[in-house]
Amino acid sequence: MKRIVLFTCATLLIANFLFGLLLSSYEWLNVLFSSGIIVLSGIFMLLISVLSLKDGFKSSLYVVYPIWGFIELVLSLFSPDRITDNWVIIVIMLMVVFQLILLFIANVISKKIK
Image (cartoon, rainbow, N blue to C red; front, side, top):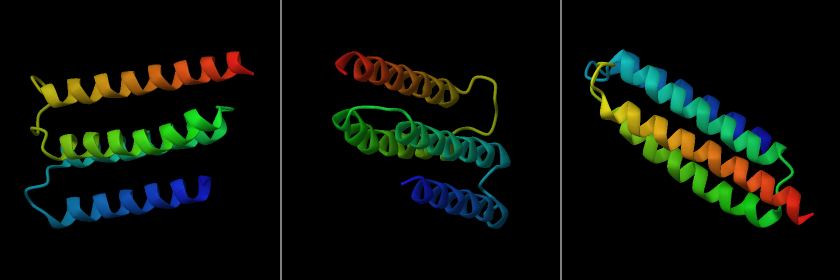
């Protein structure tokens, strides 16, 4: 699973940079945001595989986290090309914090179940 996650993230990063080079309407700030989202999603997927979670948590997080990553990626693509007054960045940051909290809770509950 780790190889699949790494290969998918690397492929998406290369495609993202190529789109950034080829499309004039795709601003570099959006390329950086979307690349960060791809890397963060890959890190979350690797954390799910590394942590000793129960199988139910692991399988459900393997489904939910890529969906959240896709939503964050779409939000980053349509984000304004400025950092100030950018509500999309705030929404993405809140989603990442929620993912961290959910992963922490799943890890704690998995350890208590054992």
